[in-house]
Length: 67
Image (cartoon, rainbow, N blue to C red; front, top):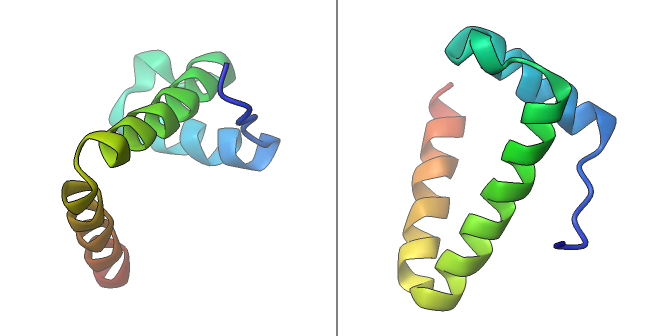
């Protein structure tokens, strides 16, 4: 796999987010798979287009600061 193993805390946070945004999939198994897939997606994005990855990171940062 990826070497990335989501912690119980990360999974719990993802489950809480899923409870709001995707209640049908709000469970630890789905949350774990989603976290791993997200990590792989951003890793691949960085390999394909580093500038786009940096842009996405900046957008995330802005969204986090405004929340």
